[in-house]
Image 1: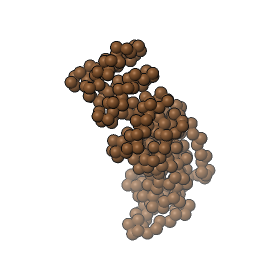
Image 2: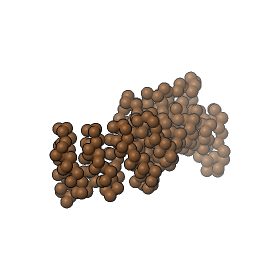
Image 3: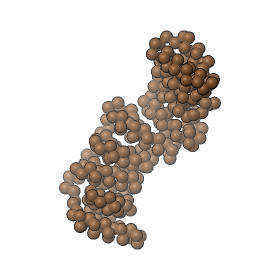
Image 4: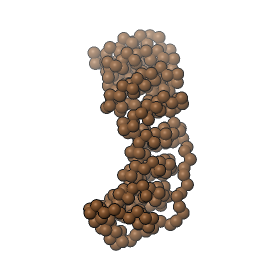
Length: 298
């Protein structure tokens, strides 16, 4: 698990009464409407951060927009609130506000929130903030994906974040897919789908094609699975059929399932041929299932 940064300060958080919060929010709203530059000193920022804990959603929105307007100067206080505040409403709002600022200095604290906060909204907002920062977030997101100690929720969010980053900073994801570390390649390959499907990224297509013959079993298996999700039978079918004969049972299984998902009866011949020589009793039912499903399409 990634080492978490320590708390930014040990000071007690500022608090606001309901009246104080309402009065401050009105002042900030007026300043925003008039295009005035908001005060970015420590005291002003801490008061705005305190407002993120107000029970009234519209007031919280005003404080979040105000802190977003302040920008990078507000990041340390927001990071502390996100990571250390006892009020989950403040932690959630702070993480969401960091999305508005998109400052890379927040990355280690966003990673800490994802890994250590039990609240799924905080986790999701932290990944959202990481994603909008862009390519600088790729390393942290990949570390989450390759750490087996992390929860399915954490890895699922990281996968989403990586795909989001890849759409905006595709080279960072392509570089990860070329990593010498197999676990990094596997995670990056899994995130290439959006680039291929929505952006027509030829480099990403080539990386996926090459991954089918990767030395690592998990990389081949992930690439095989992704091909079945892209709904492009003309491209995928000739690439997937050889993987029915892969030395890895996992890759063979994924190839059969992907061919089934493509719903192209042309694959029946290759699946049937594999069925006659398959020695793994756990793979035979999958091959038969794929054959049966494709016969229904013929």
